[in-house]
Image 1 (cartoon, rainbow, N blue to C red):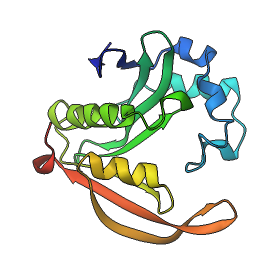
Image 2 (spheres, rainbow, N blue to C red):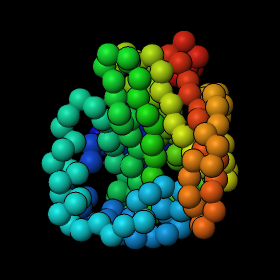
Image 3 (cartoon, rainbow, N blue to C red):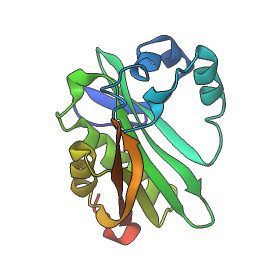
Length: 176
C-alpha cells in the first residue's frame, strides 16, 4: 500500500497479477470507456503485459485503486511527466462501476496530486476532458483545478465532434 484513502480503500502500485483480474475487461466496457480512447480498439493480453512492463519509467506514476475486499477497482495516474518542465497529466479510470459517484475518485485524485507536488516536485498538473463529461469536470474542479481553455471540436465521441476542456492546477494552488 502506498496510501490509505479511507477505511476500506487504498492505492498501491499496479501489479502484474492485476492483468489476470477484471482490469482488462474495463477496456471492453463502453460505459467505462465512454470518454476515453481505451474502448475504441481491442486490447490483447500482450498489450497489457507490454504496458505493465513499461511502467518502470520516470514519465508516469500509475496506482491501482483498491478496496479491501473487492480488490483492484480502478487506476489513477500521472502521465507524460516532464522533469524539465515539472508538469504531468492527471488521468483516472474507475473500472468497477459499483464505486462510481462515491467520492473515491476525489480521494485518489487528491492523493496523487499531493504525491506529484510534494514527492515529485511538480509545478503544474493538468487534464483534459470532453465538455460532455460532467463527472470529470466536477472532479477536476473538486480537486482545485481551474478551467484553462477549450480545444474546439477536439474529440469524436458517440458520432459527434465535442470540445475538450483543459483544466490545470499549480503547486502553489494545491491545498492538501
